[in-house]
Image (cartoon, rainbow, N blue to C red; front, top):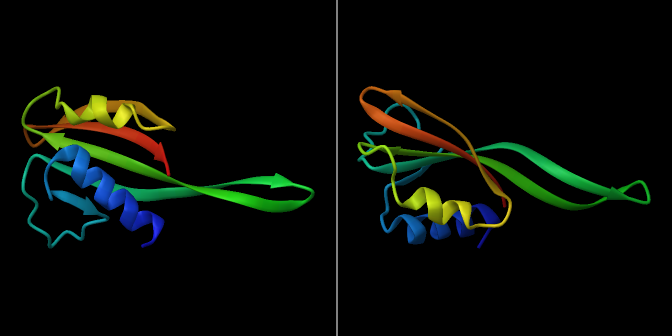
Length: 101
């Protein structure tokens, strides 16, 4: 199983729901609350002029009808996860986190 699919399973476990979407197209009808995530960059570490490790950076958006969804605290317990910002759109609360995985 690839790393991205491992992350999908981990997010579904933490969220206790299958409403976890990776880069969903506009034609998908999402059910809320939901997590939407996408890869935003690939970080690498160098030594001796060679890349030796890679970590994918993901933007994770928790979308909910309630302002403080409990999964946010669970996500922040993951290594290399940080809270970025929040906003409201279409009467839904969006909390944006960054995760290196």
